Image (tube, rainbow, N blue to C red; front, side, top):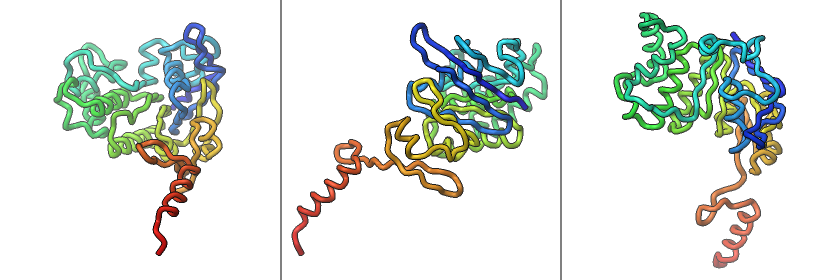
Length: 281
């Protein structure tokens, strides 16, 4: 069980600052979702958390040690990362692709325990029917689930995922979120993910972090997401209602004529026009 912590993390691509003094703490046995609009710095933060990028200031701690102190094999055994899209560059069966997640533990040949771990993970993620298929034959959604299975097979203490429900239909989105919640609850994995669907995040997360322009503007339980915060971060007016103890974001903007969003004021005007056009009875 390992805590992942960011302390005053700052990052810039050349002269363009992307992260400003970000503080974050992800706890074992909990799912933390990072929310925010496109360009908020979510993916850059994940890459700093897993060591793909080195912060220009501040530090990342894995447990009580700075991330930079871990050797690559040691870090790979403790932390897994699922990017938004992981291209398959070489012909490879799905089973073998998932087996790559066992690299931190492999010798010259896979052990029986490694093969069993892969088979169990493939079954858990629901891709057993794809096990002998070539990765090049898969859809984007199927490849996404293979990437998630590979990370789970790694048996990490910390699991980082960048938009894990991308390319998935609704059923498989919910399935993946249930799997992540189960890993946190049953294996005490520290799960950190970025996700665009606010309602999925609010339903599946124990903790929420909301970013805007490289800064964290809100954090806490899902209940921290309210209409004022959504308007500030996304520029969308909404209502937040409670269903089965969880908040749900309901946008006030409807899709109007010609597929364009219709504001509340325009909705009123449409109703008034219709009333004027209706013949008197």
